[in-house]
Length: 308
Image (cartoon, rainbow, N blue to C red; front, side, top):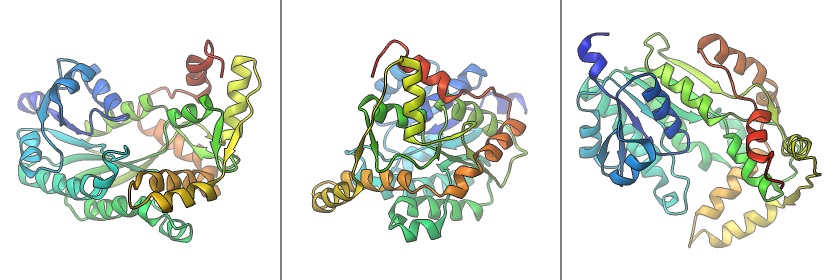
């Protein structure tokens, strides 16, 4: 890397999000210059610190993307439209803007790119369970990325520990709660993404991002109960009821439908993918330099002094 390269920023699209913040922090900890895009620059600086350069604007703007990539060394794309406010713009944010970023990278001469995607794109599973809407944007993006000519790496990310914690605090779980799912500490995603974008030897590779084990909600509840010393009985949210509510609410708010599909995906997660978590995690350990944070460690920090 030349001196000019060293001074060039790494652009993190989605840098103020749940995973993006950890990516930004890890890059800064490594002494790397970082630039992010945010609709509210002041809020972004408060969240990420004064060291981060902020381009104010909407990620769907071609001019904003061009400004963000100007003089950049590399880019990380970790965008997601997962709030009630943004869900109506999901295709524009998760597909159209991301494809524009790929084109912007090619134009600006930014060849290194890391894309944070979903854990796996099993089209047959998605179709069989009526969940193609959940994966359609990522399928289009990953197909375009393969043909982009960029030096790219995909990180297929599993749900954060926070996903489990949010439900456990409310003593509920989606569906049966017995299907094991991969999960990961957001800090670990940040460490891997930061290392990946600084390397040029991972081109064309896709990693499944997971912690050491797959957990069901029932497993997670037992772990938390052992930490607090109090039994934790979960109430099960019937997915059929959520589906009906989501269908009725769709003309007014597609967010409920989005929640239903996410809960269904978790409740029916493919068993063969859960069984391969150990192998997928070992590949991360062999490729990147980090000490993974376990679910139990994070749960102790979250629940030890906060009975549920």
